[in-house]
Image (cartoon, rainbow, N blue to C red; front, side, top):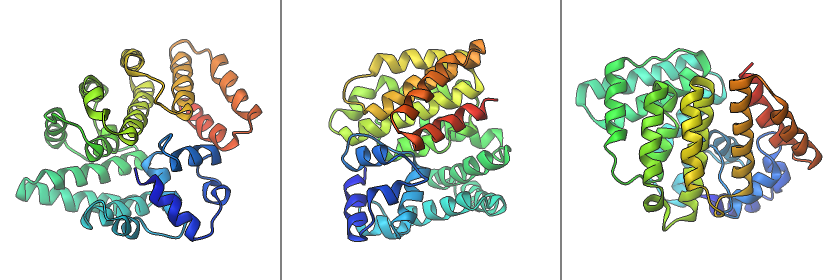
Length: 278
């Protein structure tokens, strides 16, 4: 989603795809995304917008696909995250969780959870209490038809949940995969990106659930998914093998293959995930 708009602005700014991607993602991954054949994580997308000299709020206002309030919030969270501003993320969480407790508006709970998720990623501390997490879980579990924003919200809050709840929600939308993605290649791509990120989280937190999710992912895998997604899937399966057995041969076999292909940025991104497990 937004790939063609990004490409248009990048070219207007006379920034090459090599310069845009440098140090953020591989040039090949950016090219595939711009041409609708892959997807990228939200955090990478925010960094790429900064590289082509446009803020998230200005970008979303320019393409006119979502309201003004949400991009400003996304920009605020992402800026704090990229600058490692833990205290501001915590204050943002407190602001929106207070509004949720006052008005019971689910949008405020989701905003609080996104801030809490990024805060948790940087600090290792989950600021949300069990009652609020239960409310958030109930919200996601009652979604009948998942859309782009639902997937984005869950993908950016799932660190807050215990592994069994992450698995439960991901299983719900895997069962609805065909209905969710039947009319949109871009949504299918974003769906796969989200589920692979959840797979990685479970590899870190609960290998048995990760193995179960891997089988579920196999059941919906098809040729529509990008080669970048397939590389990530195979690599995450190698990480799972390493977590279960302690054998890292498959991990480094895949990493060596990426180096030989000249996919150096993708190599760096995936190697970092291996280092996080040690």
